[in-house]
Length: 211
Image 1: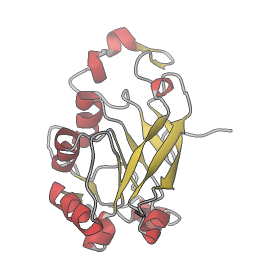
Image 2: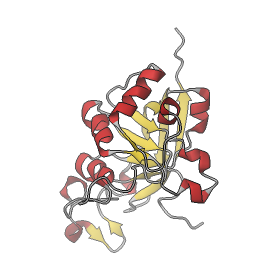
Image 3: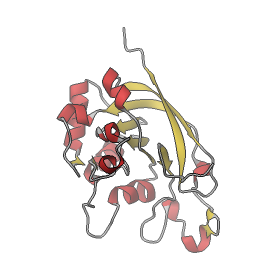
């Protein structure tokens, strides 16, 4: 079997992107990058994940998102209000842009997709205390980049500055269709030593919200 570590539903490890010559926790390539990958923060260090999961169905709350649309914290708050839920510290937050609907149509799925913006992830991490993020698009954040000095400001903020990992290319259409917004989130990735990402199989078990 041959595959890339960043294909299909996968999680980005903390060594995937660095900032100012260092990855998360200040590890430098001069000391910690070997001929078989990083010696620190590789995919083999990602633990199994069990937490409360929350779907933020932005595509349903706002309607079809335009190409390259950058999701804001106001969009997320609007979605939470329409869904009648709130975030808790330690949540796994999955964002539906609607892009997964076109997964079988590669030119459409890969082209000018909407994604989250830097201001929105800062709101999620710094004000809401989320543990893990995910989305249904190719590369989580929107392009072109919103900063001239950084090609992937969301990636570097989350991975290199905050130590928050995220999942890409999720399939969230069934959860959206069934209006399942809160669930037990369970996932485990392959222990690929030194890899900057790993395939992941996420499972959502709906919570019994009936009183």
